[in-house]
Length: 414
Image 1: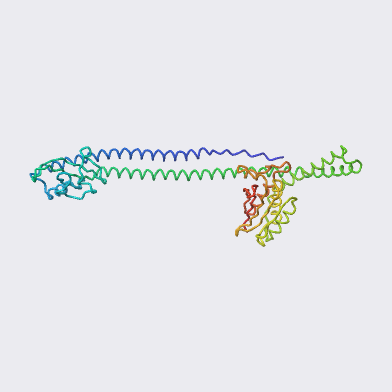
Image 2 (image 1 turned 90 degrees about the vertical axis):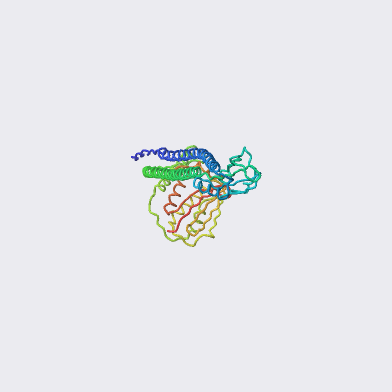
């Protein structure tokens, strides 16, 4: 009786991806909120900047108006000291169209002596606000009007901008951290799904192996009897009938089908065979040359770069090479077999000149019963990969330089 196929374990990948999407959306929302807040704070700081400049202008204007004479340099320095903490950084008195006759503090740039047009009475200069005060008092010498240039560092506005920039930096770091967490979750979720698919595949292969073993053992004995009797019947008819007679042809067809069924059962038994690998030091070049020579077709073997000895299960590796070369010959001759060592692994490469294997099929071809041949069981590559993996190695298919397929087996030293 065949064992029942285990139910497929349903996975819920959307549950994990929903968590990832939530983290990403939270990060985007956080960054958008911080950016919007920063924009609002910058707009507010511009208003504070203008307000502070106007307030300082009024304070300086009032201090200048309180003086009984044309202000001296000492007067200007005293006004600067009184309002320094509020952001006043420079105060200069200009005569006529540009000559500074008295000043306090350090001006920004070289343009303080340039005439300032009324439409540009308040300017941004090097991070400060420059304000021009018009004709507060007539100078004694010549009775000409004095003009005052005031430079203000908007302390409160700059503090607001700095706070907004700091908030944006913190928000960006938080959003980047959430994005990093999301990336980690994406990779973990992808790895978990891949592991789950691999486990599911192993469960199905294991159960398939059990069913295959039961079928092979159940079929093998009656098949041997059927094959033997069919061969006897074919031999008897061959003695009594000329070639081409219908009874003789039918008997030969029965023998052929019995042989094909026997190959199928042997393939199933090879696939489910889980005996331990017995590795001993052998000459890998001799194994590969012998295996390649047993497959009819245009096959060349290159073993000059092969190590003299490697720990292998000779019989199982010979089976791998035969399967690979047989598939390559069927795909498209000539076939090139190369054996070498990369220092850590024994590398066996079998390249054909066929159509190659599409990217999406490069894993499927190693699944049991997957075959592109009109004849065959579809177990050869599955058996080959199982044997290579039992040696601790890997078997993969790539694109060959010739345009066909390149099967590469890498087997580490035990």
